Amino acid sequence: MKLIRDTWLVYARQLGLVIRQPTWVFIMLIQPLYYLILFGPLLNGLEGMPGFEAGAMETFVPGLVIMMAMFGTLFSGFGLIAEIREGVIERFRVTPISRLALLLGRSLRDVTTLVFQALILVLLSSPIGGLTIYWDGLALMMLIVIGIGLALSAASYGVAIVLKSEDALAPLLNTVTQPVLLLSGIMLPMALAPDWLQTVAKFNPFAYAVDAARALFNGDLASNAIWQAAVFIGALMLLLVFWSARKFSRAAA
Image (cartoon, rainbow, N blue to C red; front, top):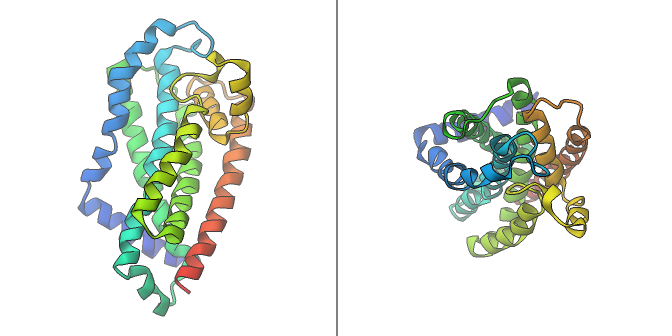
């Protein structure tokens, strides 16, 4: 019960900061909207090709939501570095608050913001791109978004505590995210890729998340990609939260 109470206290404080300064919540929507408006129409001519059987927007938007889940939470650690520099984490050493709650409260704040942004993007995709929304699948897809958000938010905070420098964090994240993004099939389905690239993509857990999101978004609730994504993203989330929690415990011990 103490962990739940402490997590709620940290979450409420962090969410309050977002509510008082909501500008960044909407700024983070700008890049996905650019892709939707300026890149999405380029895919209309690909309908019927491998990976686009359900339609251009029905294929592209779920991938765009997964991209938002990745990039919307992976860079959360920059804010923590500022708090470390200002001595915020240091001051928690004299408080009885759970060290795990320090991580979970922040990550849940990031996930709450992410879900709000993802829903806004999907709702805007209907009038802008002519997207047909399958609501049951969308609700289940949000569970994948939450899992990715928790995993990458926790990872970002853990790495931030280790590096303690924006100059080191930025190039590291960019180096890691670029191949993960390209091998996930977010921009174009991996069905269009050569066999060797599809084989490499099988080692990328986010590729399963993208496939599952597309299946759910189009009402294919029996797709194998769904349980595969649940296994890989769930395991990744538990691993990264556990690792980051240890880093938090040591930093605030």
